[in-house]
Image 1 (spheres, helix red, strand yellow):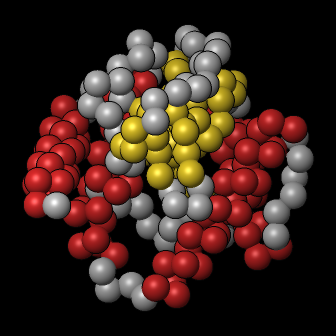
Image 2 (image 1 turned 30 degrees about the horizontal axis):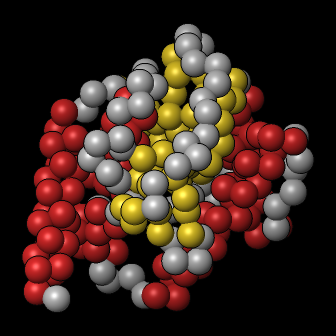
Length: 207
């Protein structure tokens, strides 16, 4: 099991522009690279609904981080049920925290992302992502989690398992566990990265 993960000081994140830079060079995020998959899924949803979902997710993630780090239980009343769901999960699985909201990048393939939590559960090091959406799309989550795990592996940090913890508005949760080394999801992600890099080179040549 891992007990400590040091921050990648060479990785910077511009929150206003949602841009990552590694050693001063801009690199794409996992979210950006997955747009060809997620655009099809969310194309029929209004911008207003997407904005509300994003605000909810941010509020819940921030409350979880404060609870994990300082034991504080503070969240807006409208989002309280999601936090109740988190505490139910936490009480049952008793995760031993290593790091929350951890920004990582792939050392050679040069993409970046932020994991919600990396913790030890039992004798396994587990990478966790929380979802507060009405449903969880496994087509997306498998690819996202594998991209994060592979980024960590590129720095010699082994992830035993990955999991989505789906926090629901009724105060309950589901947990979907994914094994390490999901070859299909990794194949999909590397294809997305290849297309992104090809398009980026072509655009630069045209300028």
